[in-house]
Image (cartoon, rainbow, N blue to C red; front, side, top):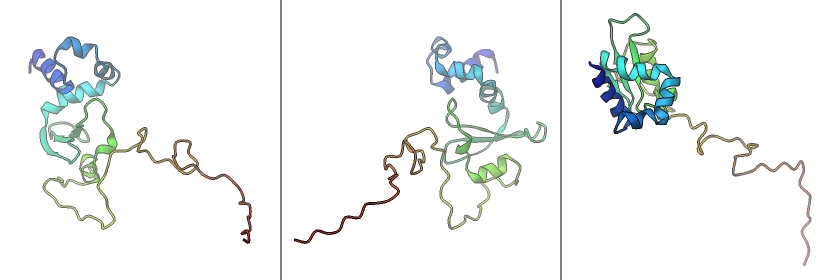
Length: 154
């Protein structure tokens, strides 16, 4: 792939219309800070075989010519604000060599208590806030006792 091909792919991934708009964007700054992002998008993504896609839209690749423990990787659906918690449990096992079962070809037995994995909500309005948290809309009553008020007879 030529340099113009890499630049075109980078613009497609970032949804920018020109190289100048990309260079002035937050995505470019984040890419400079996180060098692995550019490496995964430009080099590793095209070099491997697409194994499957999960329900979050993440794409999983494998290339058996690479060294062990670097053969499998994920390209996140959200390229510039990715979160590792968007990897579902069945893909986590495959990605970290816990098992060799491809989740697109193998049906795992699901526990009766299992719910669909979701991306962590930390830092969002849906984040968990315990009773004493400042951000919890239902504030905790910090009284140590409640005054007794006898019923008034009419």
